[in-house]
Image (cartoon, rainbow, N blue to C red; front, side, top):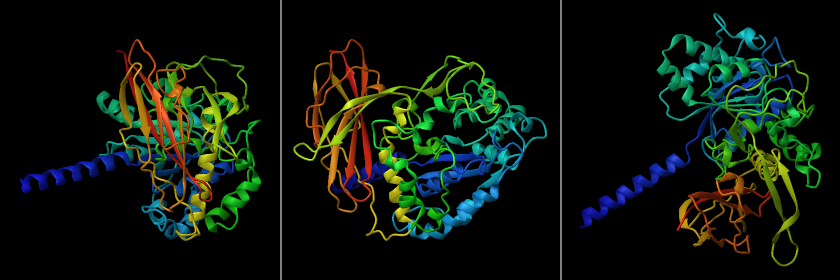
Amino acid sequence: MRTVLVLIIIFLILTSQSLFTQATQKNRVIVLSDIEADPDDTQSLVRLLLYSNQIDIQGLVATTSCWLKSKVNPNSIKKIIQAYGEIQPNLNKHENGFPGAESLFKLVKQGLPEYGMLAVGEGKDSEGSDWIIKILEEKDDRPLWISVWGGVNTLAQALYKINKTKNKSEVEKLISKLRVYTISDQDDSGIWIRKKFPTLFYIVTPGDHYGSATWTAINTFVSGIDNGNISNTWLAQNIQQNHGPLGAAYPDVSWGVEGDTPSFLSLIPNGLNSPEHPEWGGWGGRYELYKPEFNKDKEGSVSSGVPFEPETRKIWTNANDSYTSYIHNEYGRAVGKDTTTFTGYKVTLWRWRDDFQNDFAARMDWCTKSYEEANHPPVPILSHSEQITVKSGEGFGLDASGSTDPDGDNLSFLWFYYPEAGTYKKEIKLGPPENSHRIYGTAPKVKKEETAHFILRVTDKGTPQLSRYKRVIVKIIPN
C-alpha cells in the first residue's frame, strides 16, 4: 500500500509540473522593425527586452517600410541590446530567465533595403527571410508569432520561398504555425500575403488608416479618463531618467508613443492574455475574425502610399467593447462603478492601459533597484478550475482567497463580467461586493449552450501598483 501511495504522489507531482510547464509556456516571436523610421520602434524594443524572460524572442529583423524605403538599421537594434546588457544582471535579481546580450545579438538580422514587393521574388532572399524559415522549420510545436512594426516584405519573401520550394502539405504545415500581427499596412506586401495565403492567421487593421486602428489606443488621448501615464512627464520620471542605460536609451516621443508595442502586449503571460484567442481580449486589444467592409474614404489615412484594397478573406481585426471603469471611493466600499460607459474598438486596448503602463514602470525599476526596493506582481490563485459548468438558473461561486503577493503587499480584488469575450452577450450580475475575494452569481436561462467570461483582477498596493488576472470561463447549459 505504501508503494502504491508513493507512486501516486510521484505521478501527481509529475502531472502538476507538466501542467505548470504548459501553462507558463513562452510565446515565440520574431520582430520585423523599421527602426529609425520613427523613435517608437526604439521605445517598443526597450519595453520588449524587459519581458524577454517571459517572451521567447527568436529574431530581431531590421526592415524597410513606407517611411524608410531604401535602408535598414540593424545596428540601432544592437545599440539597445547593448544598453540592455548592462542592466540584465540586475533584472535577473527580480525574475529568472533574462537572456544575455550576446545571445540576443545573434538574433539580429536584416531584410533587403528595398520597399515592399520590390524585395519579394526570385533572388530576393535575405538573412532575415531565411532566418524566419529556419526558425519556422525547427522542431517546436509552439506557434511562431511575427510581430511587424514596419513593412512585412521580409515575411512575404520567406513565404514566397516556402511556397516555391516545398510541396503543398509542407506549406500548409508551416503556414499553420505562423501568427502575424502587423501595425496596420506599412508596405504593399501585406495585402499580397493575405490574398496569397488565405489560411494564415493575421491580425491587422488593413490599409494606412492609422486613426481607425485598434493599436493607436496605446497613445490615444481619451477624454474623460486620466491620460497621465502616456504623458511626456510620466515617461521622463518612470522610464527615461534615473533608470540606468536602458531607460536613457528610450527616446522622446516624436509621433505617437510606442505605436508598435500592441503587437506583443498580448504575448505577456498575465492571466488575462490568451494569444490564440484574439476575440477574448487582452492587453493588446480585442479582435474578431471577419472580412471587413471596404471603405476607401475611411478616416485616419496618413497618405503613406500603401495600397488600400478590399480584403478577399476573413482577418482578425477591430472589435468593439463597452466598458465602464471602477473608481476608488474614499469612504465605504473601496471601489464603485463609474457613471460613464465607453464603447468602441480602441476601448478594447486602452481599458488596460493603467495596468500595462504600471507594469512597464515596475520592470524599469528592476533595472537599477534591489529586489527589496522594487515591486513585483501579485499571484492570483483560484480555489476552483478556470473553466466551470453550470445549468440555467443555477448559482455559482468564484473564489480567489488563496492569492498571494511576493512582497507581502496588501491585495485588492475586482471581479467583472466580460460579455464580448464569450457567446452570451447579455449582462450577468455578480453579487456585490465586486471587490471581495469571493463572489457569487446566477447563471441565466439559456436555450443552447453558452459561454460567459469572468475576469478577476488582483492588484497590490505597492509602488507602482501591479495587477494580474484570472479568467474564469463559465459554460452554461440548458436544463
